Image (cartoon, rainbow, N blue to C red; front, side, top):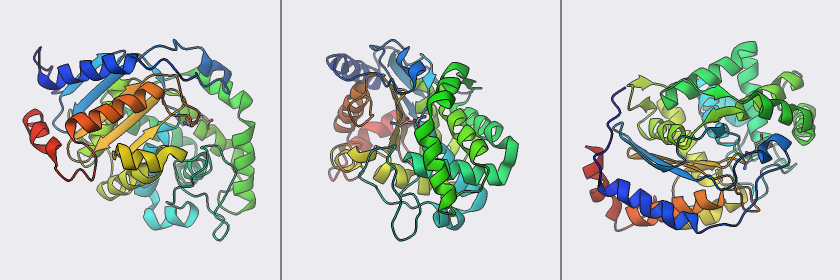
Length: 327
Ligand code: DON
């Protein structure tokens, strides 16, 4: 791995520290507790990491604390489904339209009966169905291998969170049965839901999320290991869906204010991708009422502003600053 430790006093590192200190002022939000085991984390943990598309990693705070990836997995699983069966096959079963509703909403496109997009639970369970149909019992190991290669290390798995969700995930099971009734997934419902629960229980850190984001930003190649982890076309599709749907019913505000393709999870993580430039990972488990990390959203907003990372930033102030860190 050619990860370079930034020199002390580096400008990007001190910006991260400022953003971190400002983020600490946010003391609102609550831990997700609908999966009982998720409520057993330190509520005030907070970490931010940035990985450049050239393999440098900067971090601050609790960027090395492990937590479950939860819905952040949906973006990477979608990328792999597009690679495995092609975008047309995926599009037959799940749309790319923001739903404007909560992540666990029980709703389908009235015309096509497809879930609205792969970032809400119904769409993500459909993606798990595609991967299960294609890869069978090997589907979870396949996801684990690719997620690990994107992060540049072997990721762990939280057995307790997995069991907790498997014991309590009745709403997701209900969604899966409706998907079966609509002809969207095959009748291997239990195995498909199990794959979805398992992918949500993969352990990551904010630094891992930054590296995984940087792998997407770097055209699917992990910039620290030179490993081609994701398919190029799938990376484009994934970033597009992350931008339009990654933050659930906050997605419109997110595009307007922050403008970075991103995906959040109820474990408290957010991954952001600045195409060809950066991956950003944040961790803070207190969530707002839409299920997004309060401090994570604040940190992403501050970084977007300070570095000019918004996708439609007309002055493009960020690029010249970032160029210095990328070379
Ligand atoms: O479906 C669930 O309940 C979780 N395993 C994942 C949900 C999630 O992370 C939604 N994110 N905000």
